[in-house]
Image (cartoon, rainbow, N blue to C red; front, side, top):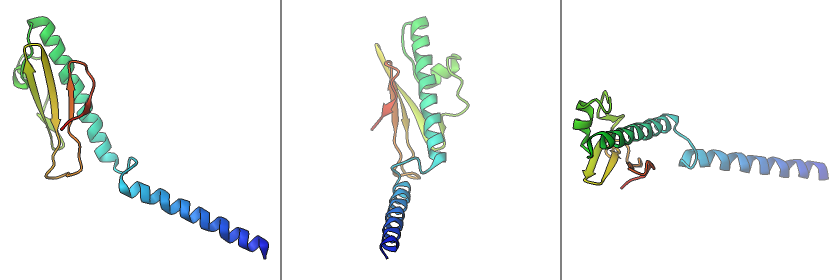
Length: 126
């Protein structure tokens, strides 16, 4: 009888851990959506590419420029101005730049916008 109760208790613990693990996956605290994870990695890579092109352009021309001028000068080769709903924007001043990837809040309300500047650190934006 004692062995049976131990078995039932062990089974209850295993089921509880199993349930909590899959509840965590559904809540999004882990990488529950691989497609959106790939999209975010692509967006971050695009931002770093644009930021690197800005740094190169500034070294060659002494100023920062917007995304259209950067693309027309050959500094960056974007086939599109965004990725899977994200849209890119470059904000410049005489001594700095900021590249923003705006997330598509209408189609993905829980998404995150991303930003990078001359520090080359990609971080969540507003």
